[in-house]
Image (cartoon, rainbow, N blue to C red; front, side, top):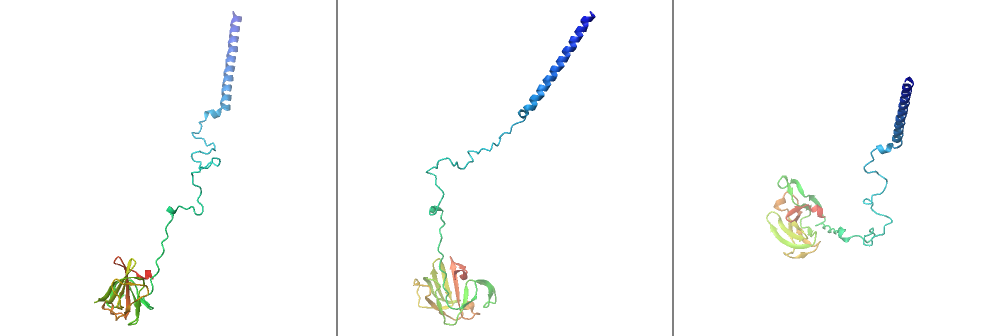
Length: 219
């Protein structure tokens, strides 16, 4: 009976040892499997960059045949005339009305006649009494006559503007007459009442749509 119990205990220890050995072997195999295949446990990127070109973003395939209907690069003479910017020819500058010096400019300044500061709608050129005044540009005579404040006046429409010659004795002109640049307008008269504080001179105005313009921009 004692021998039988001894063999049972010995067999149980043997099986226990085998079970522990089998468990250790299983754990070892699992560890080796995990170590070898550890990349499987990592999450893969959603959109891996494999270095391949995206056909949607590829502007041109060098191996793709050219489309005969597709326009090629523009060369000399291939410009689209619809995109061209027209270049307007500049108008010729006005001629000087006489060979004198401008003594008063356009804009606000001191007025010798009224002895205050006020707006001057033209430019004044000092000239000798009786000196000739010439048309600064070609045009059509709109007015030729006298005025109580300015004395003799000649208005000439030249393109879009009207040129006014004030303080002159008009030449033989008539309304509607066509004159050329450099034609005689008249002669310098005594200083008009409007600018009586100044020596004899030509007062020249240029208006566009009735608005005074700076004559210096036209010479």
